[in-house]
Image (tube, rainbow, N blue to C red; front, side, top):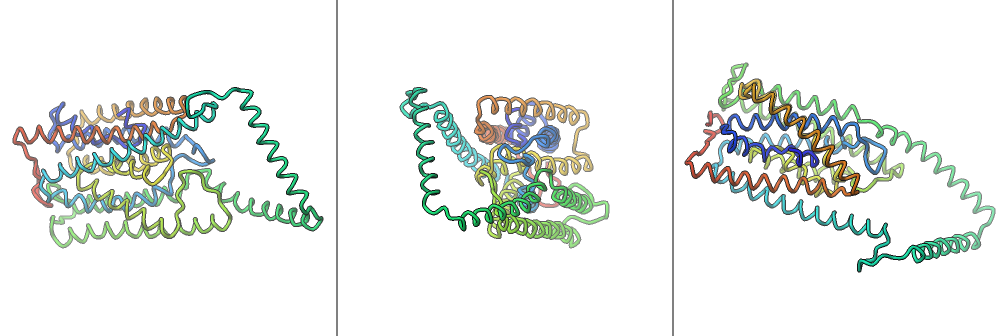
Length: 423
């Protein structure tokens, strides 16, 4: 949990096998306990991250535009994947899950090593260390810097001497005035970005509340509907399509809003920083589709979305600190929704649930503080990427062990189909 805290990916893939193999819980109770542990950790993560600022810009560390794009269709994909989880053979799901996590871990750790190498190269350059390991003398470095300054001064003098007429001087003043006007318009955009966008947050909260309400009202499998909706009936499927339709409407709204913001920024020459995603008409289609597939696999294999979305955001080029904070915030939404469902359906063991929640909160709190201390001390953002890759790899290993033990004992947990009770 302390390692997973830095990556903001929850650690559910580690907790479920531990609760089953070490503590002896059945999957039916291990998954809810894992979820409330992750919820405690996500609460601690979000508490810390909402107080932090972006490392390269004057705005919150959590990227709410990114969440607004990723979360709706991730949930939609997870809902669809969850149906397949109920009908596909357990052995097939286990093999595919381990393959997916192993592939994800490999790519994430590969990217982590590249980031680590780039950081090392940058630190060597700052310290004046050459590629062969020898250190450039202080006198040589000062002389080199003076040569660069002198060359730039000559270049500026040459530009001034080539045609410094009064007319051109007047044009320069005019351009400076235009820049000042542009700065005023840009300032409003940047001022809005200094604080968390409440509209984005309210849209996401509303989406989750509606999805949770419909999900509880329709029931399913072993959980009777308060409205008397029978699993597999026409009303049951209408409710499911209603959820997907609602999520699609939110996604369309989010796309229109972000494209409009992108055009406004483009018009006023907004300067993006490293790791920012420009939400143009193409990006607002491609990335949500990718997120939908990520959610689909998360739902189909019964793992938390963070274990998929964390590596996905790194692959998208998002700054590691922003990826970690945004992923943790998304997990807070999803784990709260799932925990509420487990409580309503009576699947959460109360005594253990309180302990697991506290453990998740404290472990994550100290884990994130410790990791960010190391990042600040050694100036390495790659530690977050290593955290994500390591947790995903460990999840793949533990889930493999759990599956092998389950097969050796002859215990196969079947869901019994979409409307089955499962065991």
